[in-house]
Length: 421
Ligand code: GLV
Ligand code: MN
Ligand code: MN
Image (tube, rainbow, N blue to C red; front, side, top):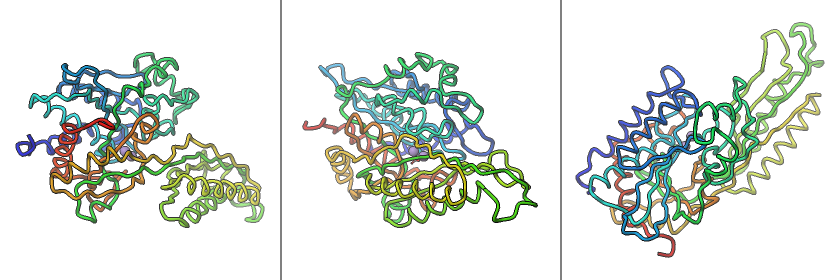
C-alpha cells in the first residue's frame, strides 16, 4: 500500500493548514487550552478521527482519543497508543504536536481503506494541552492520562483570573473538571503495549544531515519556574541611582546569571521567555518584575546542579539589592529514555526502506515524557525545514517527508511486536 499513496503526505499538510485556521489570534496560530479556537480544533479532530474509522471519546481534560479497534479475532488485545498535542505556543508553528495527531489519523484511514486490521487496539490521542501557555503548567493533558494530575492545578488562574477548574467545568467534558473524573481518566498501564509519538524535530540536526527521519534516544528533562522580584516604586527623576530598589534591574542581573550558568555545560540550556514589569510606568522605578525560567539538560543531575546554583545566585542578587524574591517551581519532568526494543522496530522499518537509521536526543519536551512514566515509549522525528526553526510560524516540513514518515509508521504498525514478542 506504500507506492500508491502519493497524496498521503499532502493530505497531512493540508489538514495542518485547516487546523491552523482555528486560532486565538489574527494572522497567526495561537491555540491555548480551552479557548474557542481550541474547542473548534478539538471538534475538527473528532470528525477526522471518526471519518478515518475510529471510535472517539473525549476525556475529563479534553483529550480526544480515537480507537482503531483490533481485529475481532484477537483474544485479548493490548492497546498501542500514539499521539501528541494540539495546543500551541503563542504565534507558533502548525506542525508542532499536530503532526503527531494528523499523521496517525491519515495512517488509520489508509489502513481502513486497505481493509487492514491490527492485532491490537491502536489509539490516537490528541492531547489537549502540553505547552503550558494559559495556566503555566507542563504536560497537563498527558499527566491526566498517566495518572499524575496534580489537583492543586485546578485553582491555578489564567491571565484573566479564571481558574482551571472553572474553565474545565465550562468546557463540559465528562465529569466537568471534578478531581474524581480527572483521576478516573488515567489509563491502566497493564492494558498498554507502549506509546509512540511522531513529532517534527524542531531543530536543525536532520536538516543538516540530509535525513528525513530520525529515531529519538531520550527526551531532555526540564524544570520551569515563575520568579517574582519585588522592590520599591519611587520617582524616576528624583531617586538617586544608589538609593533605588529597582526590581527590573535586579531581574536583569538574574536573567544574565541564567545565561551565564547554562552556557557552562553542553546540553544544559536556560531560557527566560516571559518578562513583565506589572503595572509599570516609564517614570516610576519598577516595584515588581516577574519572569519565567525554563531550564533543561540531557541529564537530570546536570539540570539539578544548575538549578541549585541559579536559585542560590538569584537570592544573593536579591539580598545585595535589598529586593524580595520568590521562586515558584512548576512540577519538573525528568529525563525520559526511549525504549530500545521500540527504537529497534522503527530502525528495522527504516533499514528495510533503505533509509539511514539515525538516532538523536530530543532537547524539546514531548507528551511521550509523561507517558514514559507508565509505559515504554519511542519517538520518530521528522525533518524540520527553514533551518530547523520551531515555536515560530516559519516552522515547516515537506510533503515528501510527511509521506515518508507516514509510510514508515504504517510499516511500523503492521510489523509491531509487543515487548518480548
Ligand atoms: C514543548 O514544546 C517544549 O517546551 O519543549
Ligand atoms: Mn512546542
Ligand atoms: Mn510539541
